[in-house]
Length: 83
Image (cartoon, rainbow, N blue to C red; front, side, top):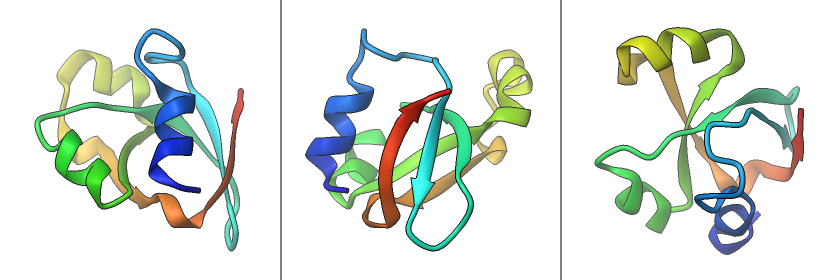
């Protein structure tokens, strides 16, 4: 997927902090939330996205620890869907 397609889907106000299923070309889907931290614009320019997976969301909401997130390349996304 392109940066524009992903950003349109996760635009602020639409699905903020709502978990999404991220489907990939070559692996199982991941459920998580896209987060916007200080490096968001730089990552977005490279079609990279910081995601906190479903099992770490509660802890993320409490601690805001970036170590709970993973960075995924948007090129490998096939689609995004509601949980």
